[in-house]
Image 1 (cartoon, helix red, strand yellow):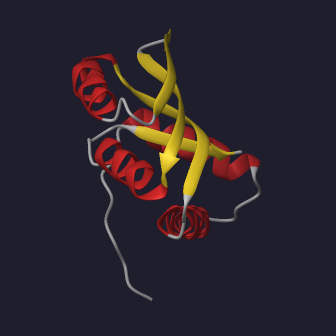
Image 2 (cartoon, rainbow, N blue to C red):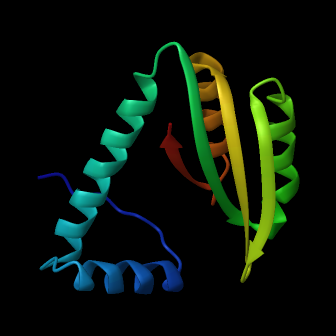
Length: 125
């Protein structure tokens, strides 16, 4: 196996370890392998979208990233049908409903995820 190094804040590591323990993983490595597998699977699915896509996207980020996230969202006004912004603790949460060509949805998701500390969850409908 190959060994990799990942930098995390103390809070992120503590939360990861808590979730991994609750999920029954016997080691950090097992939990990381599972998380990486899920990440690859989710991103492969997004890359294979075709045709018109309707979906809801949750974007979670630090408040200081708000300007960057909103700039990206505004660039895709033709596929953004609604957006709601709220605050949870020290983070911002943007709920976005998208409807448009899969290529445009993919580009939007790619631009958002390219920003450090921006997390995305997507539900297709």
